[in-house]
Image 1: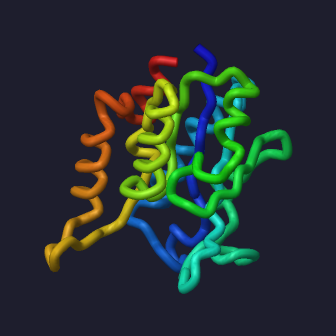
Image 2: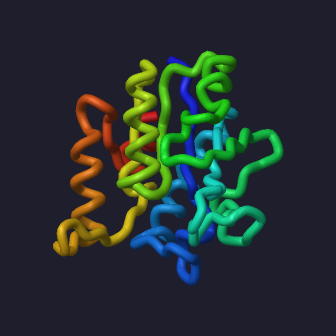
Image 3: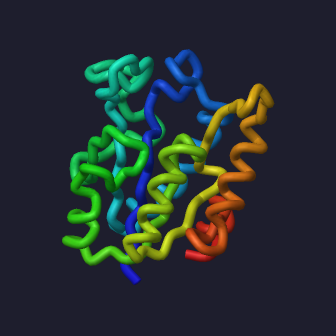
Length: 182
């Protein structure tokens, strides 16, 4: 099995003082950095996904802004692939699938932001494309949401979305569990 790490949208706008701050983004980025460090030590493939918003009315990840830049905890190295996307699904209208195929990747380890949006969309698409996937739960972050005027805390959003991915779509693990079983 040949593995790649996919880091999704760990960008400045999701952090304190950013345009769309998430709950636990700092902690999640530190866990993502642990996973990234492990991949770098083994010279395994790392792909950084960067969302740049081109949608009219967007308020974050605007082109050429500090908020759209990768967070310092997971800054890409020169030899690491950065794929720009404009939709939640990291495969949609990007070269991600081609790049993974060119590198004979069949297993993905995924971390990033937002769990309920881009992580979810990418994991589901990857499974449909035939990949085996592990999601690193504590290396992902989300935010408080609302549905039909009912508030949903980020902790509950995180738990529900990861529970929905676990089993069929992915194996959901913690950083400690993943690094302990490499």
